[in-house]
Image (cartoon, rainbow, N blue to C red):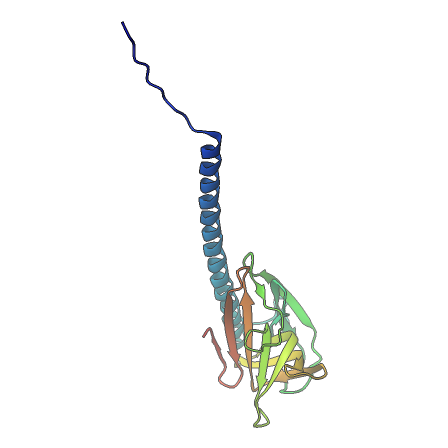
Length: 213
């Protein structure tokens, strides 16, 4: 009696290598997609938290909230710089803020807030539309853009008026200079994540508005 034998073939080494390579590619694409969604979520959260802190300080100044140490506050501040992943909330006591004048007040730090992971204030670049901190001064009737290396946004007590102190150079080139308590400037702050996606916050000193276009 003849018995027929069936031959069962398994995977060859080449087929296994190809299969593993395909699975690895699919896995890496999936991880990249998840990472991209996480970065987008972190960027949106950083923008939301930063704008919320701006509104909170503006509210403190309108309420004439006192310094936590009990002294009378004259302004509530938020300080930041390009390429930094945190910003500082602080309060000023002492001299009333006068536009274009250095008050000479010391700042008392209230808290330091971190942006979400992977998000920072963009570095200043040759393109003002994407630079980290760009201030537009139109007080002279001619708009001049400054790229700032440091910025303090002050909300003066009791009306929440926005005054901005910054160290900057004209974006078109020139010497660095510090400007104190500028009342009529519009500031664009650009956040960037690891994917290169951008988010902008606009502080309008004339209208007193904070927006995210």
